Image (cartoon, rainbow over all chains, first blue to last red; front, side, top):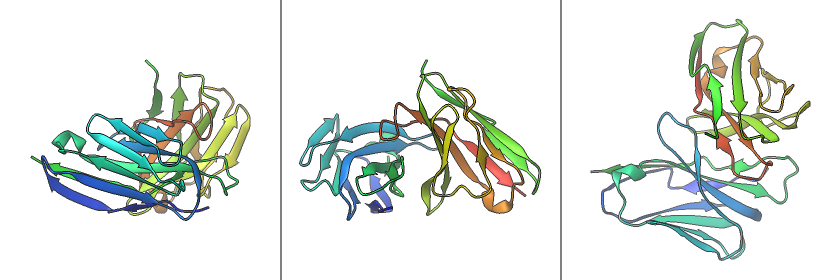
Length: 113
Length: 112
């Protein structure tokens, strides 16, 4: 099973700042999903990117899938305290044989007021 | 409301005392799975089920059992819990293994 490496592992910023988190792998993924997990809750899907080079926007969040479909990024503009949470990427490894998604370990984001 | 429910939400038990964590979904999803989440290790899949009576091991199945007698339910069984099974457990369901995963609220288990 190939790994999805997320960076940074931890990020603490002030309200209003911009940030980017990354999800990288040596494998090609047919699609990448981004989830946000708030304290005490299960992860919730934010977006799925499918096509290499695809860019999707969700209000202040911009998601990009790399041209080679091996990496993805999440950019947040003017972060707010409500953006605080654990951001997870997950994908179907085309080289894998198990019927499951591969999850990254996540980026823990704290946005301070 | 479409949801995945888990019970109990919190459980403190002792080594060796059998326990079951229940999971139920109301979305008619065929695929269900169990994950454990540990600091520094992320989400790791324990078992999954492609449909009724079809289950298979995930990445960390040792010490766990599952069953899928009905489409909506997928209980996780710990026959003889040990302290290294102290963790946060999530049940999830989806249309298929690579579709959006709908997660339950989590069960925090402590084994003393």
